[in-house]
Length: 62
Image (cartoon, one colour):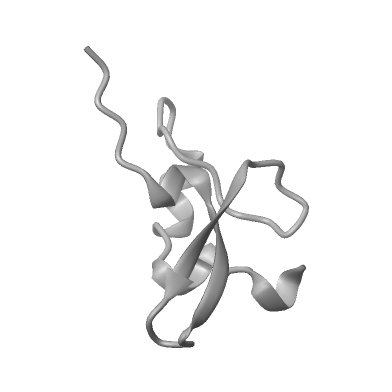
């Protein structure tokens, strides 16, 4: 599965000290992180790719 998946770290990461800040909304990505994955299309690879759902969709809460 890893060969078909996007490594979220390639999109950029926050400074390490940010994760230690009280109330910081994000956590660092690890390969054993539990998240939902969805299929998309990579124009760079010209192939299907798995991406974390939280990065693939923009949610509007109302």
